[in-house]
Length: 265
Image (cartoon, rainbow, N blue to C red; front, side, top):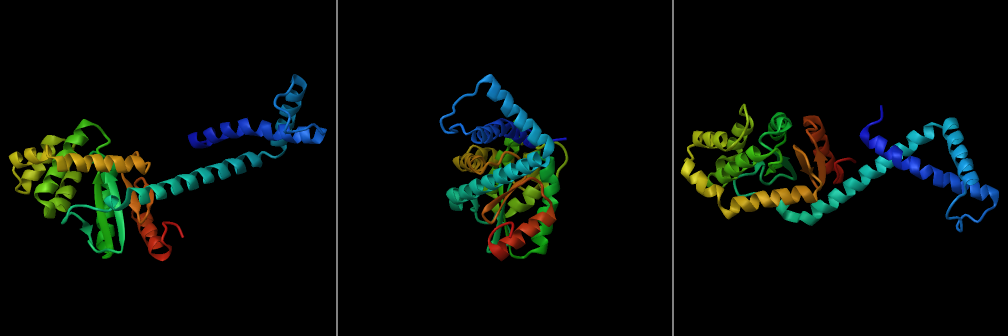
């Protein structure tokens, strides 16, 4: 079965092939191709016959064209995202002092965009911890993008407020909240913060601060500019890696960045 992406590409290709065939038919007939802007019924029938016959005789051409189109779209998207990473600039890799996971002076930075209610993010946390434990030169930065509704926004506000109050405890707080069961919301995020000795009153004050609001705005704007619309998503080096790709793929991307400057050498 064709994927939605392939089906869309197939539709575009189906619309294009008659024009290619038309040019071929006209060229064979000796008619001036550039001057031809419309076709009569007889010409249309001839074009459709040529297209049908060619595709029946060479069906592999359709799949080859779809593969080429998909590869081009992937390459175009990657190039656009890489340009967006450069445009976003240092803000993408910055985080308040004390909140970098791993090595603050690491040679490769991995930025993860996450949501506290994202099931895949919960699973990906183990990948993050394994990566940091195995690689002493990884600098890991977290960007909160609450894309899964109001409860995620509540949890993110509490988390960023906690980061403002106790930046050196943020990594541990992040692991505790993301690793907790049930829905993350304001109440559950505050309860986890209290386990770390941060009082609710202080959190509520910080939650309304311009720093928390600005951090959320920046992260959401970055995600939009980078074409990120789901969690988890990563920026490794200067390129976007979408989805919970797993530890092996993350390590391979990092190794490639070290070797040749891109996630795929």
